Image 1 (spheres, rainbow, N blue to C red):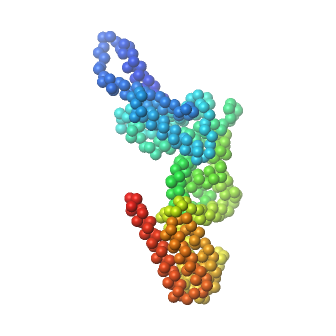
Image 2 (image 1 turned 120 degrees about the vertical axis):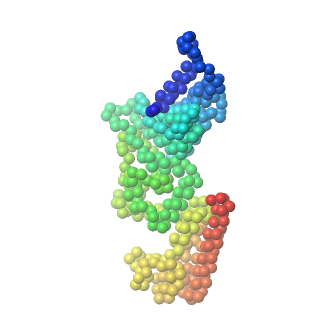
Image 3 (image 1 turned 60 degrees about the vertical axis):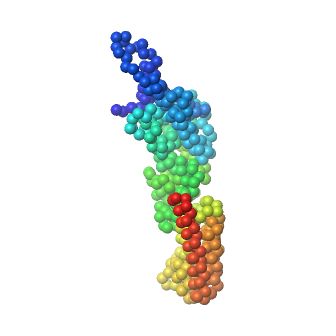
Length: 405
């Protein structure tokens, strides 16, 4: 049986009327007896947020705070508030009719769907979200549908009123970006996403940036990263105005706006340069995360000063251990070591005492390498640095075991 949120609300009201006016039944017909508690639990309760944006209609015991009405309104209101704060958007103006309506049944069904539909109104749209069994609904999907409904309300708020004749209907923000906005609302989630992006990029697994922006569906972690960059560039008010004017989402334009470049190759380079800067950013001060170790380890390589140069005849780059054997005959390796000695401590700064100690040990090794120390001395310094790095890794493993992860 197909139902809509509106039909559910009407059905709930019909039940109220049926119980309130039993005399409507024929006098010669037997009226089945009902448990009074069952009757009361079918009464719909309606609550609306103070700004009029959200209305919840739920079957619950009137006045019972443990019913679904209050918690659902609080849940939806918290999502709307966090999104508005994350995107620096003004609170919506007071509405006559709600932009988000959540209809929750009494849960006497195994239907755990979260059904959402945008309904046109004279001014703006109303998104109705139906929960047949609210106690068992998919919370993450409900969170997403509320977030999408909130974005619709913000798009409508940026629309001209009255709408000029011939104006196209408002466009939709892509689902992946709505999901990305939700991720940046959670500070810890945003930090974890950034670590994963930096770790993937350091290993060569970050996609070509113009292609990433043009995708119809962006993976969650990368969606959060792009949403964070859009917030940094204050692009959301601009995007909302364009969607309100009926302009379809354009991923290629997003790549241009984020990087400031028209050429695709330059866009990718600008993205790389930003990630290089982000590598030096302290995400969680005083704490070493597994991704921090991975990123730090990815920097323990030496490269020539220019991309078209090599160490000797066959080395475009080398490990620190290889550098010990090559340095005697390759002055360019000593020059690269001097540069790297200044760089390495920056990748450990503020990221935990153990990693900082390892970075200083690597710096001492690199300074000795640039100064032409003997292979025996260099090997001893490098092994000492590697030992300290392993201690930092062991410290993280122990902490994760204690935290049960």
